[in-house]
Image (cartoon, one colour):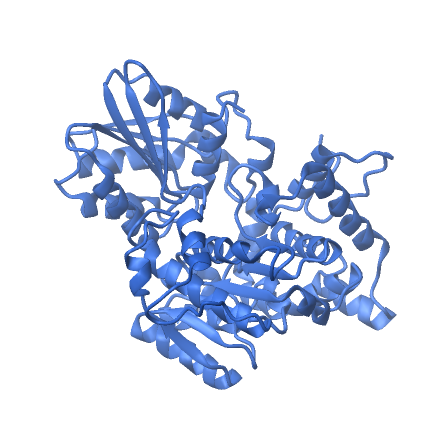
Length: 501
């Protein structure tokens, strides 16, 4: 039995030496299990109303006020598709200004692919295991030993749930605040988790710049079922006194964003694709990344200007300086438009990997694969999605490729990492039905669905990601291109298996 056995009953780890493995075990105990998640979703409006007050109280209990975060000079980024890539491009640009202008750049993103430490990085490096464990238990212990300032407050926050430890993502957000403030980070880039208005990152009061990537339909039970509702929620990260930048949006989304900007007295600027970006080979190599790179250019330029160090030579609507160009060319974002070629004397095996998991992201990832597909190669699809409408996603993927690119083999697997039935410890997921995952319910349905979509290809169901990799490697074709998509959980597990860890 784990030492940290349930969501809110986790106890202090009593030994003198607390390791990184102990931290991961404790952190995993804060995941919301499937049954609890369903209950939360049914009372979503109540949970949302309490989200920010809870987060402010937890922040106080670990020793900080929201205004303390101003020291981090935060760039805050939301969106449905492309917000992580935007953060990666922004970080890569600003890294060219270390140490001449900036000292330490913190980056907080989600989800992680292989290690939770990826979510909290400084100057491009995930927090080392020893430091992660130390800071983790500092936050853990402060929450354990603290209480609200008065019996009335204590009772009120206990009723809200703030007397308990926060769930997984909120805890990591608290941890990022503690790490970045302790390490004296002077620039931080924060990717919103879900939405914006009620997201745990939205206790930030004075960001240097706000970015909004492409908005689409996703997380409807949390954010609303229309573009207007979703955009309203994402526009919640705008702050009075801070300039906001958005890529071109559908009219309903733009109108909702502009309404929020007017409400908060914020200047909202629409960012087109920069002409120089169009001519540049981006580090994250896909045509659709041009708009995310252009948004990053605007965010980095505004950030440097607010800090009193406008880029020199200046960047404008028609030109970019060497630092910005180099940042765009060297940006990387694993699991997004990523290509891995496995060396082999007899067979060329190329993995084309993108964690697309929404209609919009599946569309652009599929088009990316279509451009990469070689005429004479054998094509394989490896797909997993447990929580969204998986049938709709594979249907869209099939319709986009049409008859131009067809798959010889299609492999549906669960998000379990190893053939032993175990998850990689940092990829453990409790927010799906364990029984459905083990019984491969979704995978079997997808195989039946695909057989109707494309009778000419061979659908196969396997239990785990490791078995999917073994199956692909065992195919007796000379030239194989594999599209891996549908879930960042799948992509993370695949990268772990490919590395043999």
